[in-house]
Amino acid sequence: MKQIWIITKKELKGYFDSLMAYILIVVFLGLSGFFTWLYGNNDVFFINRATMQPFFSIAYWTLFIFIPALTMKQIAEEYKTGTIELILTKPISDWQVVTGKFLATFLLIAVTLALTLPYYFSIASIGPIDHGSVLTGYLGLLLMSAAYISLGIFASSITSNQIVAFLLALIIGVFFQILFGIIAGAFPGIVGDVISYLDMQYHYHSIIRGVIDSKNIIYFASVIAAGLMASELSLVKRNIN
Amino acid sequence: MDISVKNVTKIYGTQRALDDLSFEVKTGEILGFLGPNGAGKTTTMKAITCYLSPNKGDIFLGGTSVSKSPDIIKKKIGYLPENNPLYMDMPVMDYLKFIGKLQGVDKANIEAQVCKMVRICGLDLEKHKKIGELSKGFKQRVGLAQALIHDPEVLILDEPTTGLDPNQIIEIRELIKEIGREKTVILSSHILAEVEATCDRVLIINKGKIVADGTPESLRKEAQGKEILKVGVNIDDKNTVYNALQQLEEIEVVSFVDEDKHLFLIESYAGKSSAQSIFEMCMNKGWYLTQLTPVEKNLEDVFRELTN
Image: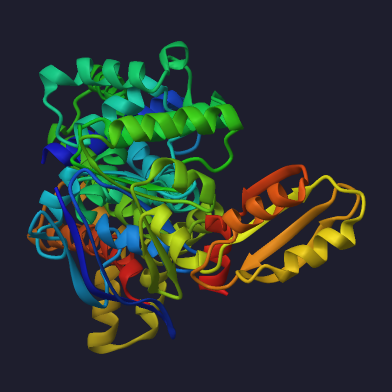
């Protein structure tokens, strides 16, 4: 655990030292703020109800694009500069490195989301808000971010080129974000059910509606675990050739 | 702490990078690892440092198996990988602290330990700069400092002096020598003079196999075979000298090196020395001997003979 935390701290510091974190926070707050308050179509005033739903919809897509940009360099750059050898010959295991990096990006996203809490307080002061659904909304965003971070780290772990890692993470993401939902319709019966279960929007929307089903939680937990394990495997792969 | 590599084989695809390689390094020894490109030096080092696991065989550090307990082994090794990879956007101090923490240096000691490394490696003026801003020589020192931060018992350095200027090379060599008094050191290099200057023992490998093992002197002697002398006689008529030299019974071949300066290269029969008889002959004839120097084969010749 100590080793994981050392990696996490280093990665987090890297985000804040390289402006990456500030750019993410500013752009994310700008975009989500604009669409929540000012857009004119489907914003809080347009709906005329005290609800965070506009924010949760926009944040979902913004994070979908931003997360690959955050994860793309995490392992790819270590391959490129050779530091992967430096780090893996220290007393730390492959999965600790992967988990440490995962946690760092997750914490950065969590901080970014925490900075949107003033939206919640403002809306809550305008009118009666469903506090439960706000809570599950944030939970949904955190779970969805964690899933994409873990897939992004996997994409970063199979190439030494950051651009390839970014695009790959987006392509994998698009499957979970949209394509599984569409493809599922084309398959009848059990195959269709399985594919539609993989669709992230479905699980995300059922969580932000305020329903926390074990089915959804298991879904997110398995995507996160699968991504992290696949990343670890591609690190271990150096021994198999 | 001694290192013993036992029957290690590593295969990349169809290529055998290490072929049943076995050797031992005793505590306190500085071992120089030589070999042409692709001989398996780096692969051996990666196997010792737990980065790659061999297909066959095992490596032991002080009796502990590398494959069974990598976490224990990694704590005892300080490793400077090939090309000295570093996190370029970290400041030197932060980087050393980060590595120190990873290596399990106590929280109470870490500050002192980092300062000590900065002092030993001569990084005092550069310690607050980002690593990417340093010159190559200073980066190399950061690499060494990182390898030494937890006071390891075993030090593994993969080409520690590549890309340094001659002054820096000498400084780094001195540093390694000093460190090597208490620790077991393995270093690889292309520069033979470097190995000769720093190492107690030399291991030459080629195609994943050991082709020579011994002190630099013993390797040179082994390859020496016949005695070769460079002789200069200051007499105008060089042919007289040539004939006279050829008549000495210990001498097998006489050849001119530099006709103007009257220099000859003389090869004696195996196991014989002709120095004394040349000297006596010149004395008897009243010739003025300007030079009588043994020509030694250097490690480069040994290396070329063994790996070609």
